[in-house]
Amino acid sequence: MRLNSPQINIITRACMKASRSLIRDFGEIENLQVSSKGPGDFVTSADKRTETIIIEELQKAHPDYGIITEESGIINKENENNRWIIDPIDGTTNFLNGVPQFAISIGYEEKKEIKCGVIFDPIKNEMFYAEKGGGAFLNNSRIRVSSKKKLKDCLIITGGPKHSSQNRDKIYSEYINVSKNILSPIRKFGSAALDISYVAAGRFDGYWQRELNYWDIAAGLVILREAGGLVDFFENDEKAPLKKNILASNSHIHNELSDLILKKNIE
Ligand code: IPD
Ligand code: CA
Ligand code: CA
Image (cartoon, rainbow, N blue to C red; front, side, top):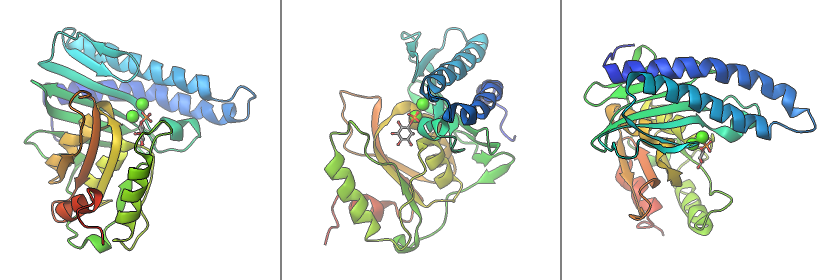
């Protein structure tokens, strides 16, 4: 670990502590898959348990900081200058199905600007982290976005529309439009936090998705930018500041990918 600001240390400690119980819970999933009740309720409690551990750890260090979390909502609402942004399990559906592609995501915001973030995949033991101005890292190694310049050769990842999506047709047509312009099929891995981290690490070249929540991507924003990537929010609803449509990629393909998604480039 190269960065050692107090905030990164606090987040990392919280992640490591919470991940021990998360790994134990993931081990239980296999048994629950075959039980008549199924793993649904268990996963909800695993989510809450993980979040509780994270909140306790973060509050030990700074009881006065604001917190935005997926499961418990907003804590210490009045403090908007120092805020933790938490997703205890990003990739819940994977977790529920015993698929090892999920992560804990924790970001730290100062005066509404994201300053540092940690995304920890406890199964692969991969910790992606960054602090503004300090570069981005995976475990002990510096990471950078890919240097591919031709969109056609790029590996692109996205999520799909949610069941409740109001933008289903739009999302499908974006998908078709992007896939017509690249050689490899579009990937879908089911964890927004890891999707962005993988772009930061150069494993994928670009990622876009509508209808995310801020906690899905807060930590990923600083990791991606510190790895040299570009992030755009598009067509966001100002009345719903925690909802985000995002495009993240290396700088070479950013405009071309953006034009395809925003339909400036349909034949
Ligand atoms: C979900 C994941 C998924 C994305 C969904 C998110 P959750 O978060 O990030 O990749 O497609 O939009 O809601 O529910 O697993 O924390
Ligand atoms: Ca999430
Ligand atoms: Ca979640």
